[in-house]
Each structure stands twice: as C-alpha cells, then as structure tokens.
Image (cartoon, rainbow, N blue to C red; front, side):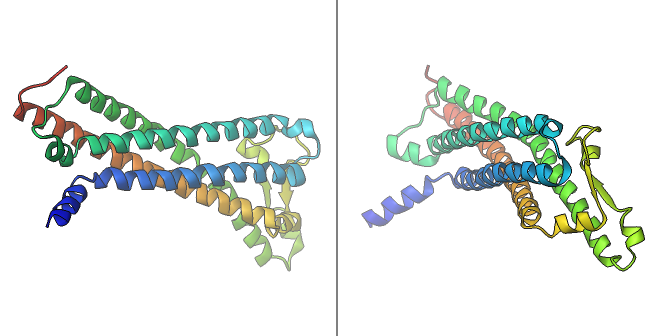
Length: 245
C-alpha cells in the first residue's frame, strides 16, 4: 500500500500539460532547426547550380543563409533551456509540492516568476506565429515550382508552349533582377524538378514548416498551463497564511 500510495502521489504531481508541451516543443524545434538548416544549405546549392552563374549574383543570399543558420543554432539552445525552465515551473506548482512539504504558502517570488513566464511565453507565441507564417513561403515557392513542372510534363508533346512556363527566382526576392539567367523554363525547369536536390529541399521545407507548427502548438499549450499555474499559486496563497517574501 505504501508503494502504491507513493506511485499515486508521484503521478498526481506530474504537470502533464507542461510535460506534453515540452515534448511537443522539443520535437517541433528539432524538426524546424534540423530540417531548416539543411534546407537552407540545399537551397543555396540549387540557386548556385540552376539560377545564377556568377557568385556576385547570389552572394547576398549566401550571407543571409549563413546568418539564418547561426540564428537556428541560437533558437535550438534557447528553446531547450526555456522548455526545461517551464517544465520545472510546472512541477513547482503541482499538488505534490503541498503533499510533500505540508501547508503550501505562495511566495511573492513564486508569483512574480509565474507572471514572468506567462508574459514571456505569450510574446514568444506571438513572435513564433510570424515565424510559422514565414516558414510557409519556401513551401509555397517549391509547391509552385512542382506544379509548373507537372504542367510541363503534361504538355511535353507541344514544346512551343512549355517554353513559356518558367519559375523566376527573382520574382520571389531570392536574387537581384540583373541575375543571369535568374529563371528556369520549359524542359530545363522540368529537369530541375526531377533532381534529388529539389525533392530533398522540398521535403525538408515541409518538415521545417510542420516543426514550426508543432512548436507554435507547444507554446500555446505553455500559455494555458502557465496561466493555470499562476491561478493555482494565487489560490493556494490566499488559502494559506499569506505570501512570504
């Protein structure tokens, strides 16, 4: 019976919402950062091979890709540490603390810490919503490219018409307007779409987009759980002997 009661006490004190959000955040960030990093590398290779002949035409894009890859390293580290902190805060406000340490008293520091987590997580969710929207742009670009290639393959018996079907990287702001050739048309574009680099890059961007969505879901779950934790602290603080500094 003692072992059973101990297990039930431990299970009852697990912050399941924070635990699920942490697992979602880890998996989402791993997908977004890992796949996003490799997708950027493959994008630079595609641009260099098929859309630009001179290094000066895509040197700015290459610097931006390198910059974003360093940002990805920082994002992975920050979210790993922040998710651990949120999970620890979730354990702090569970009922097991009261069952283990006796009468619970909400400290002023504890309530301030919970408020800080709520504000930070809320702003992170708003910012990450923008990241989620921006991560859809490369998926949209490659989807249009794949659709155009499919149309070219359907019209391959009439070469005079397929040469008018192009994908221009300059229209998406990836390259300056004086880049040569800057676009791929007709069977050349169809050949690009059939390469391993294209399929790999497309799949990586889809995975990164899915990872951004999972991370956004995790942050929204954290917003709910941290708000609930703050309400628990206030309730138990009023029920106890008052706040302590």
